[in-house]
Amino acid sequence: MTISSSLNAGVAGLNVNANRLSTISDNIANASTYGYKRVTSDFYSVVMHGDLSSSYSAGGVRSTTHRLIDEHGPLLATSNATDLAMDGRGFMPVTTIDAVHRGDTSPPVSLATTGSFAPDADGILRTTSGQVLMGWPANADGTMGTFPRNTMNALTPVQIDPNLLEANPTTAMSLSANLPATATQAGASGQTYSMSVPYYGNLGGQETLDYVFTPSVAATGAAATNTWTMSISDSASGGAVIGSYTVTFDGTQGSGGTIASVTALGTSPAYNSTTGLIALTTGGGAMDLNIGIVGEKGGMSQLVSNFSPIGKATNGNPVSRLIGVEVDDSGFLHANYGQGFSKVVYQIPVVDVANPNGLATLSDQTYNVTADSGAFYLWDAGDGPTGNVVGHSMEQSTTDVTSELTSLISTQRAYSSNVKVIQTVGLSLASATRLPVAT
Image (cartoon, helix red, strand yellow):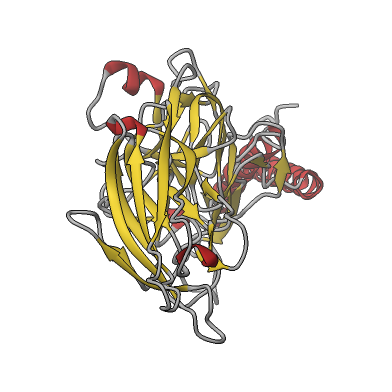
């Protein structure tokens, strides 16, 4: 029993060291594989119970292997904006290009910590191995809706049309024109003043808002009224007046020249004295007109000076073509256009599980959720326990070649030693049974 147990222990030693050699080989082979997580082998003794005072039976050894998925390799900067890597805890959701081509409505989703994504002929962001980036699509105006966080069903393949044209309409305009205070004094001519401010409509065409300012002239012997009528007409509405207001300016010390009150005339949109905004509806779309806050400087003014027609659209561009995409640290994928503006088109959530090392390992550095990993949750990048999504970056392998080579030497010695044990046991058995010894 003792001799045979020695043989069994030697065979067990060969098996576990062969397993360790396999993990070392795998780690070294993937030392340059982006996103690779190294594998380790742990040995555990096997004890055979018996009467230790009379004899000892060798139990041997067993091994287990596990992948250290929660380890993070260093990030390497790249020139591709859609080379993505996780900086911290969490995973990016991906699916396979085959599932996309099949038109699966609920494609299988796996997890990855890095990937070199690039648009294919259909504009789908994918790696050369066929992993497709998944995300939540944004609304047409670039805002994000509300999506469930405990299911992958709302995720869709990230697809960018390289020939996409985009109109960037003007949604905000500021007006800081100065009106001459002398125009409302008694005896003034009542001359009107006008100005035009261009903007871009919903279809990308250039339109204008035309402003006409008419002073309310004081009666003879009376003080200046400091009051004007402001009329706004819109070229996209066929020149129709879309707003008319009575604007009164403050003439007191300290606040002189600032807006005192604004009264909407007829059915004109109301003025918000707290924000200084008028919500206009133009033929080219909705627009917030900022004329200034009551009692504060920075908007329209009335001072003893010349008429200064100062107004501008604070956003908007003509029709532009897509020139590239990039992902920010918060996981929002921006489409960048030739006129210098960008728009959010997708959000890449970060998937987290309680036990990353319990994930099932797949090919191409991807993983599946299991009972051992725990349930998943979709976070915004950088929120909760998760890290950020970093563009222009790839996560390098967690393999330390020097450490693996050291382990390789010790494993080879252990393997040779177990071979020697088996040879010695074989000689002992042959001698005990007086059998010829093979040479």
